[in-house]
Amino acid sequence: MNWDEIKGNWKQFKGQAQQKWGELTDDDLDKAEGNREELEGRIQARYGKSKEEAKREVDEWMASH
Image (cartoon, rainbow, N blue to C red):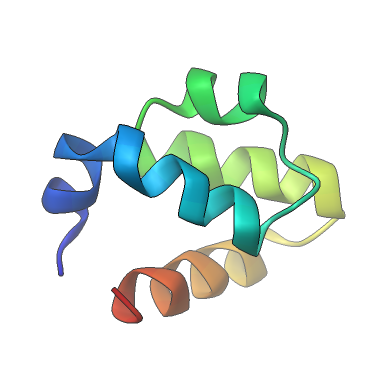
């Protein structure tokens, strides 16, 4: 699956993202609105991860779908 598909179906994937990153709030995910960079930034902020770590986690999550 590619990011365009996730972005296009964000409402469906939002719940799965919240399961993976439980510290992200509904507001965090609503603000991301399927924007990959925004999601990575929110993961960085909530979890104190580096940009590379957040990108890798999003890559792994995307590959699992």
